[in-house]
Image (cartoon, rainbow, N blue to C red; front, side, top):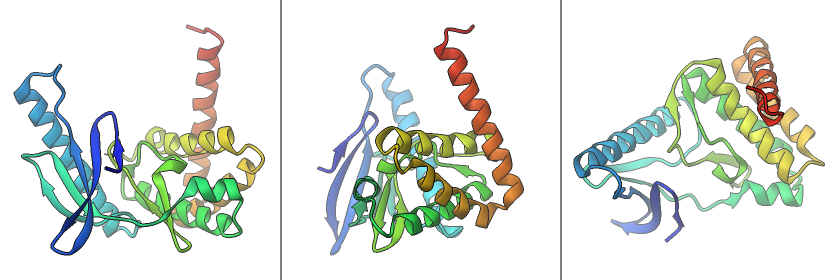
Amino acid sequence: MIKIGAEAVLRKVSWLGLTLVEKKRMPKPYRHPQLDKEIRASRTLKEARIMIRAKEVGVTCPAVIHVDLEGAAIYMQYIDGADLRALLSAQHPILGQVVKMLGSSLARLHVAGIYHGDFVPSNVLVVGERPVLIDFGLSGFSTDVEEQAVDIHLFERGVAASHPSISKNVMEALKAGYESVSGSLRLREIVERIGEIRARARYVERGGL
């Protein structure tokens, strides 16, 4: 057992000499059985398609080995890497380089019309000096600037909350990597939308209607 999430259970398994991760979406008793089965199969297929497309555009993520729609399970490459949060805590010397590469990967996703949906440090593993993006369960296909801005906003909020002293430098590295792929115009659009998202959040926190 690796992790029990709200939607899926992750297990480390062995298959034909390969070490894989089984991500299995579990039935929800509050849903009609047939509807539940269709939802789990649809979400499993969507996640697998996104991961395959991410690989095609040069994003380092686990390779999809097998998809079991009947069992709502994806069997993917097991990544034996360090958690990005450990590098952040240690302020590791390779941190800037890793985060810059991560920004490039995120931009490749966005250029391909994919948003991650849960782009936070806990969903990044580091193998050597290369970041590996994991958990595409909330990902989707969209070129909308709002969806893409939310990815960066989530990452920035996570780093700022856990490592405020290095947050600015980390985000500068991420944006530099992002800009190297997306271009300065798209990055500017993303940054402007992040400002709007923050403004809306502050308005809600103040009790605005």
